[in-house]
Length: 328
Image (tube, rainbow, N blue to C red; front, side):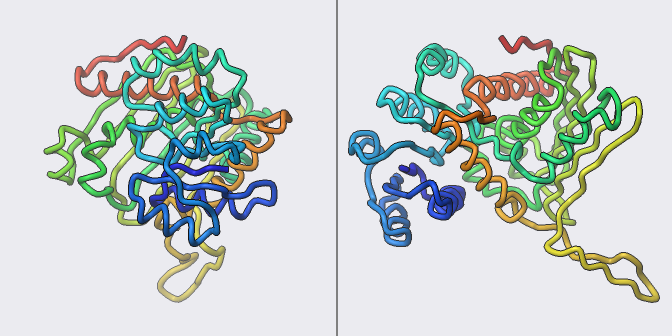
């Protein structure tokens, strides 16, 4: 495989590719050539340019983990080169650009997958299995809590596309993973603690309500900081009960003393710790797709639909109005 992007998330993908028995890391590329060279030396592969990855002839698939503004162009290059591609989210920051290449990507027989890794988290997978098993009856409400331990750097946030396209986009995909088509979005944005984020014209906290085509309600709560750690929870309410998935700690040890009970370790404090398994499972599913086996990878259109919802949430938060959406 070829890997484009050797930054923080690129290193996680490099580990996954090198660690999976079915895959080998053949080439890496990054605009930071020193980073690409260091990664190549670490994993015993070639440091290349992106163009070389597409033309060398020794790469069977490409994983794109470069900055967001490069995702779509690299995806299209991979498709045009006939090389399957797994691309990190978001698919792009501009829906017009996505729509301009939609027919090219979907009209090709080259496998394309989008990196919504949370679909592959074992905790969320079991949560979804319970919901769809009928154990709680018909799903009526879904609550998604997603809060980061602290904001990313101002330099990153300035080019991230805003909280809805950068952070909430994971939650939009998870919402669709449970309720399917969404018909309306009502969002509010708040500037509660970060003057730097406010100066960028963005929000540090959000609340979003989605309405599905089946009249199910999805409520999303986001914050760019949480003193108690990386806060990732989901709760589903059905007409026969409720199911919830809580945060993850490193161990299940509990402490009981005279002044406290059930004290446990802090939540895992970084997304790379919390979701490490999901990245490995995401890659394994992509390999199944490459082999022509039954696979459940998020598609190009899944990436597009999440961006449509992010755009609608941005519009709603700015206008104060509920926004109707069509995901066609």
